Amino acid sequence: MADETDTTIENTAQNTAPAPSPAAAEATTPAAAKPAAPSPAAMPKLHAPSPAAFAKRPAAAAHVPAPAAGSYSEEAVKAAEAFGRVDDNGTVYVREGEAEREVGQFPDASKEEALALYARRYLDLKEKLDLLENRLDAANVKAREIDDALKTLGEETAEPAVVGDIAALKAQFEALKAAGEKKKAELAEARKAAVAKAVAERTKIVEKAEALAAGLGDGTNWRSTADKFRSLFDEWQNHQRTTVRIDKADADALWKRFSAARTTFNQARRKWAQARDAERNHAKEAKEAIIAEANEIKDSTAWGETSRKFNELMDRWKKAGRAGRNEDDALWARFREAADTFFNARQADRDQISSSEKENLAAKEALLAKAEALVPVADEKAAKQARQALAAIQEEWDQIGYVPREAMHRIESRLDAVDKQIKAVEDAAWKQSDPEADARKSSFEEQLIAQLKELDEKIAAESDPAKKSKLEAEKATKEQWLNAVK
Image (spheres, one colour):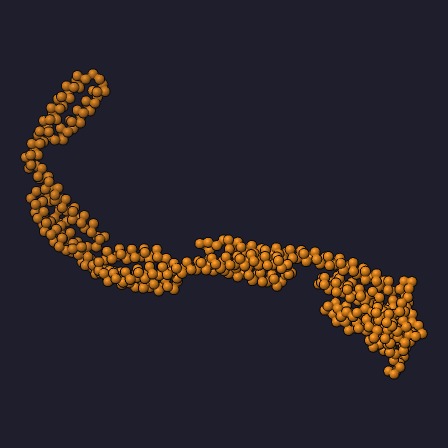
């Protein structure tokens, strides 16, 4: 495999490599069965293979590992040796079906050593097939890895320079080819499903971004929306790192949509920021003008008129909009300073006036006590004296000045009550001495007497009960009038 190291492949694929010592070739043979190791001078050397054998040898493949030499049991080696032989010249042959072919030469070694060497090469090659068979069951196997391994093993099993059951070896290879194709199909389906899932997940990210872009408006919280776009971008990058690679066309199309949504947001935010800056500049200019006007009138003592002007300036301030937090705070401090200058001065004046008004109230309450002592009056003479005294009190009252607003109605009402009591006695005396009033009273009484006489005649002559009842009611009313003026 691509991530494994093959330390013996050149010895299993090339007959020109140095031959292992008999001791190494028989490493797995039980100790009692091992032949005595020859001296270094007597160690056999591999001859170069014949041209036919050289043409048929497979190429080396570093990604298909072979087991370490001497890792097979004696039984396995003997079973492989049963398919070969060595002639007197050291040429090794393998039986393949009904035919026999030359696989190599080992003339300077015994027939047993030569046959065992090529039997182990067979077992090495079979072990590679077994390793691939196991690898196909691994969860992390890749399709390219399968292809590379099958290619190499196909070359090595075509006409291997080994001694063993070649037919079984090739049958196993064919089975592995079928299993490899099946595994690749499964991997392709799994990848297809994984890609579809990844595309769907990335599409959701894109759709969230597009929904944010579509929902932009006057009520958008730009900072919060920017944070959401940043989070979606982080999610996009993490998805790229942690999921299967999707097709470039799909990835480009989705990125184009995501990028377009971000661009829409950035352009809208930039436009909003420009409009906001323009509004803030306008608001700042308006508030600067208001501050200038406030400074012009802050020292005025026309309390009422200037108070109204400051209220108007405050209304304009509220309608001017915002100039930014820092700007607004500084501008408001300047406006507040001008307003405080005026309103503090007005309050000081009011405090002074309030003190004077309280003094005036005490003075008027003292006069009020004198006025209320004038009543009640018993007759016309007493009323005349009380009127003169009240006139003097009222003249002094008017000279005192203002009192607190909340006390004004109370004391004015009490003074008016004194005036009304005196006037009631004066009016009564006047009515008794008024000759015109007596004449008017006598004339009205005579008219009532004449009308009552006329009503008596109408009542006596009326036969209709309803009309008669109406006349009697009119007579009763006029009789009451007559009693009142007598």
